Image 1 (spheres, rainbow, N blue to C red):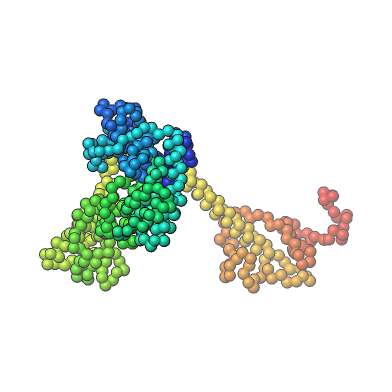
Image 2: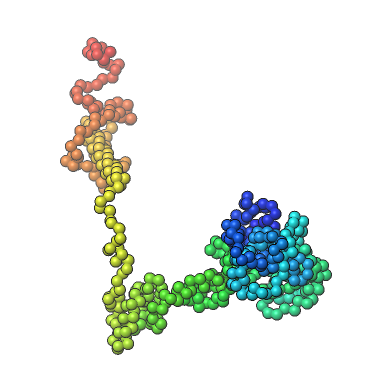
Amino acid sequence: MGCIGCSCSTGKDNAPGCNSNGGCASGGCNRHNTYDWITALGIQDAKPFDVVEVSFKNGARKEFFKNPPFNRVTTGDWVIVESSAGGFDVGKISLSGELVRLQMKRKRVRNDAKLAAVVRKAHDRDLERLDEVRGQEKEVLIKARVIARSLGLNMKIGDVEFQGDGRKATFYYTADGRVDFRELIRHYARDFKIKIEMRQIGARQESARIGGLGNCGRELCCSTWLAEFKSVNTAAARYQNLAINQTKLSGMCGRLKCCLNYELDTYIDALEDFPDRAERIKTQTGLAILVKTDVFRRLMYYTYADDRGKFYAIHVDQIWDALDMIKSGSFPASLDDIMAMAPPPDTDEAEEAEPDFESVNDVIQLPLEQRKKKKKKKKRNRDRSQSAAAAVEKAAQNEAVQSRPQRPGQRPDNRGQQPRGPQHGQKQGSHPPRKDDRQPQRPPHPKPQNDARDGQPKGPNNGQGNNQNRQHPKHKNKGNQDPKQD
């Protein structure tokens, strides 16, 4: 895995982004990182191989070098290697032993090829010098882009890589055509005072060197594991029924995404069962056109050319039967008749009809569901009883108000008559419940109600059982008082 934003370039100390073991938290400190499991297990090769793989600048570049036996270096060691342009370079051994032989075979490098050699292990001063030159790369990259733009060259400087001793710098650029950069090299050599090498790369190689995150949320495949690039065209999107939208199908490099080729073989194999010329089917009702195809469910969606309001999902086997009928000279009546043709057996229903396990739906009952149902029933009955009791109490209050006699000299009370407007809590046009419709429950005793207009009780009974007229406390006869009231 590549380390985006990880500053552990030398591995000398645990820099930010690295864990306590000196490794990177994202899986490795190199792009195109490889795992030497033979060395990790401590297994010694029966036939030692004298070639090692060395990575430079966090795996942006990897090369093979001869490893003399007196160096005693292994995977994970920082080493000084010979440079083809003179001087030396500093890198980290990523693979050693038998795995290097397989890697050379994969990259088509012959075992007897002429390779540079590993000089020795790198010490602290070599790593400090490497950090110094790596720190200058960003500033040099900005100045190099300014110079190229001032000269009017149609090119883009993508990355700069310094050699370990700081004597040489390689400028990686992208361009649509051939660029005459002889004048550019003179400016670079005069300003930077180092040896310059220009190397043209493609847009995909540039994204692999820079790195980044794709719209899938993961690191770019080209910067983590994808080493060989294959051509991608829009036919891959058409086979997968994807909309030809350049912005959605393009990656960070501006080219079509490499992941369009990952599932292409699966789609091609599935499309072999579909008819080639089935975009239009003639029926007696009208011409039917193909709208879309569900490859893995083996369904083809059709609609009428004149009326596109309804879509018909027809199985591919039924389409083959309809095409055979058309070849014989008879046309199907409609798309509904095609759907009614001997449908293929549904594998999902067959599996549901004969399950491999025993169904226990009718045997085991969860007590939790029963408790929930009981609680709901109890709550429903309680709400009904409360609503019925409230209706009875309201009816009793209305009856008590209507049966109350009117006192002489008192304003007429219209509450016992037909109200002019809707009462409080009662809709327009609704009537109070009748006496016959009330439930046979004992109505509660109405509380004594006082008239707020004269401050006197409204009726003689006032909710009590006796018929004695009440008098004001000042005008009561003291001799007639009940001694119990004292």
